Length: 439
Image (cartoon, rainbow, N blue to C red):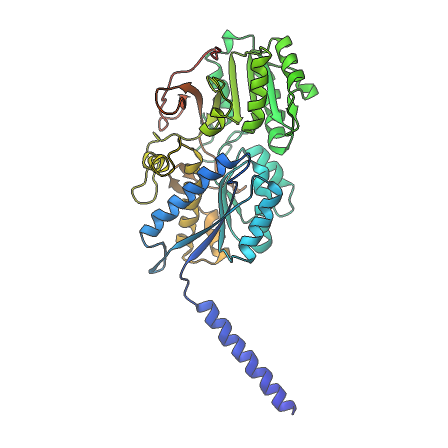
């Protein structure tokens, strides 16, 4: 009897080994990539454009048969879920994609840093490589450094830093790679025509705090006077709807420069109240809120006019390759043709993250997550939106320019034009608007 039992155990073990070997050797017929993106809610502008860019890159590679692994080409299948601009939902969406949909990898376009935390945790837990786009550097690093693992499976095709310079590599010492550098270099053209008094506004959460706490002291060092930053004036909860006390303080102090970083609906409410209360600064620069046409036009009237923002894109970008014959200009044309909407810059971010993932899979010659993760560490790739080369923090820096919303003739009343650039591959497309016009 013991011999029969032993024989049975051996046979079962052999069968399991055979089945396991067959499973490992099974031919991969498609590569599933899960996408967690805000398609609705306050960050929908980021997500809708980003998802389009991701799909465009997948369409381009699939036209070539798919990703090259060995002597085969394997198509990519996207599985996109909407996190509804809710950071708490993003992590559960990622876990569902991994556990239920059995995706091989995770990918996303840009959204504010807190939106990526749950996804990075899920990628860590299940050891699934996650390629995303996120910025700025300082808030993202603050979140990353709080984790024991530092998210070894997350790779940020980052956009920029607020004040932290590039300290290593061939970008070290070059201008145009921090918000402070670009904004103040542009500001220097007109700052002497103001009283240098600055009002800072930001949302009281990790991303907004990162901007506020870094920008205020940096402005002081440059000879500007940010009003009441020691009291955190202008650093307000996301749910704030009455800004009158802050606006009154800025108006009474004679603020002529307004700077901030916050979601579009938040700033829209602030800016409408500012106009009603007669607060009219000469220079306005608002990060995040003024990035997308659909957001700024929702403010109404002439409120977008002259509002500036540090930007990282333009269809006129030179020498930035896509997949096949896709270029920044042709990708922008695809968006407007297919959606009938004004240009959304997040399409470039989505397209780029997929380019990076595809490149890593092809260099790894496998869909094995550990091999692909190792390949991502060695990335040095020219993309549709600048070169991607990850540093020791899994972050890749990109250049910045300064843009302003100005009036144009056409179906869209407003256009975000590049008015200041320190890079020969990003041409200036418009003239600076100073002071901000008020009707």
